Image 1 (cartoon, rainbow, N blue to C red):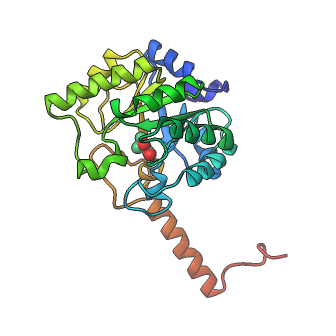
Image 2 (cartoon, helix red, strand yellow; image 1 turned 180 degrees about the vertical axis):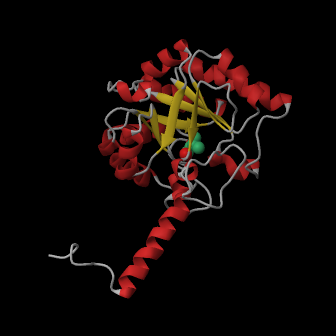
Length: 272
Ligand code: KIV
C-alpha cells in the first residue's frame, strides 16, 4: 500500500510544502466529476486539479478558452463531493481574472464559496500579479502556472515546448520568484525543458508540479483522461498512458450491443 493511502489526514497546502522539504514527490491528477474524483481520491492522490482542460476532454472544445466560470464551479462542486483526502485546486477560467483584479477576486470568491474547493490556479506571470496579490490577501490559496499556459494559445500560436531560449527562460525564473514572493503555495510548470524546471525547483521554496517538465520537479500532474487512454488522439512525448480505456470501454459497449440484439441480455438471473 502506498504511503499516501495509509494517511487519511486531509492534504493541505502546508502539507505539500512539507513534502517538498522532505523530498517526497507530490502526485496530482485532474478530475471533473464526482465519480472520477472518488476513484482518484481512493487511489491516494495528494492533490486534484479541476482543470480548465475540462473544456477539451469533457466539453469537446479545441482550446481551454470557451469554458465559463459557471461551468468550472459546477465541475468543482461535483469533485468536492467525491473527495475526502486530497487537496482540491480549481482553475480560474480564461476571462475570469485577466485585466481587472477586483473582478479576479470576485471570480475566485465565487469558486471557493459555491464549490467548496480549497485553492485556485491561475496562468501567467507579471501581467497577473495584481490579481494574484489581491486574491491571496483575501485568504485564498493560489497555485501559479508558468511555461506553456494554454489560455494564451492564440498568443503563442503553438503547443510547442516553451522557454527554450535564454530570454524566455530568464523571464520564467523571474516570474516564478515573483509568484513565490506574492505568496503562491505552489507552481505548475508546463512543457518547458527539464533543466529549466529543475533550476526553478531549486530556486523557489514552494513546490513545483510538472507536466512535460521532466523529473526534477517536486511533483507531477497529468490530465486523467489522457493517462487513462480515454483520448486516443492526444499523445505528446511527456504523456505516459497507464491504461487504454478507450479500447476497453468501446469493446464493452460493442459486447453489450451484441448481447441486446441477440436477446442474450438480460437473462433469467438478471430479471425479476
Ligand atoms: O487544465 C489543466 O488540466 C491543467 C493541467 C494540464 C496542469 O492546467
